[in-house]
Amino acid sequence: MFTVRKLSKIGLVAAAALAIAVAFTSVSSTDVSADNHADRNAAMKSLGGAMKALGAAVAGGDASAAQAAATKISATAAEVPDLFKGGKPGANRAKAEIWTNFGDFTAKANALKAAADGVAADAAAGKLGSDPKAVVGKIGATCAACHKVYRGPKV
Image (cartoon, rainbow, N blue to C red; front, top):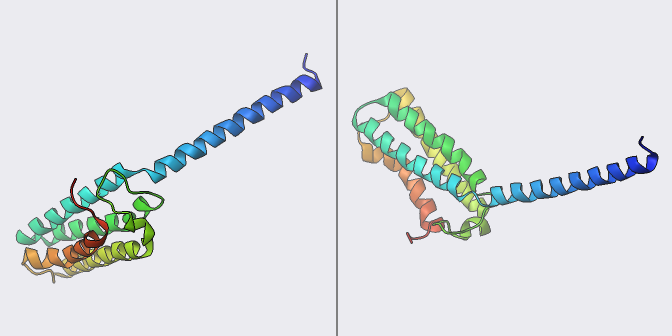
């Protein structure tokens, strides 16, 4: 039979176990968000692949595929600030300046998104043009502006 004293002890043990579980869950979720190099790397590679697809679509005169590639670039660019938020430099090419000047970094990601949105709109309106360098260059200039400041050399 349970007494008040036994129930109190069981409650204290359960509360302590819950507190420990919550503490470890909080630590692990912080570590995951602060160390998502793999997600950031995958997003950057995705941007590169979409840029190549955009160039190929423009060269092939496929406005629909160009629009899809530009839309993918825009969607990925929108995710970039969140992928870096709370992170830190590590064994990768991301410079510490990303986190010391996060407002500018975010502005550069927004410029990438705006450029990609413009290319997608041009493709939808049939105003894309046929020069892959010119079309990709509209977006590529924003990539270069960010990489110049926030991307380190290959190691």
